Length: 120
Image (tube, rainbow, N blue to C red; front, side, top):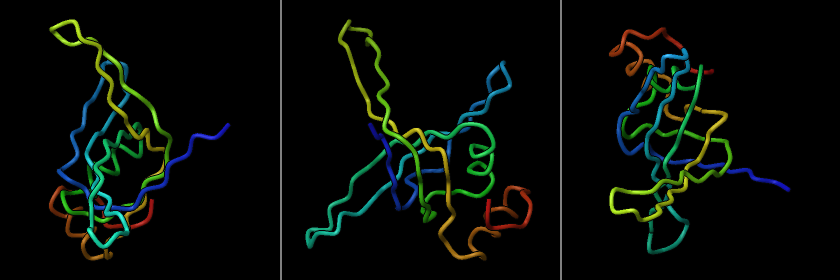
């Protein structure tokens, strides 16, 4: 069995980073991926990164950044306040690739105090 997702698109909003008491770090953001159709439809995905990749996203990824994501499809399930079961697909990313120009990524790094660099 195989559960593998590869996406290339633009980030929908600045990443939201959370630090947990356990020391783990999680970053989430949305990713817009254009379909190769003449209608130019856009699919939106919820991306979740953990650990070092989450910290890289915090330092180098901004709204509008062109990135590539490798990961797997997961489902977040919960019961809402009205007792209804809810489900949301999430891409649990294992690899983040910065695809914009080097100067774009360095500008993002310098605005957040990150180190100069491009590949992670």
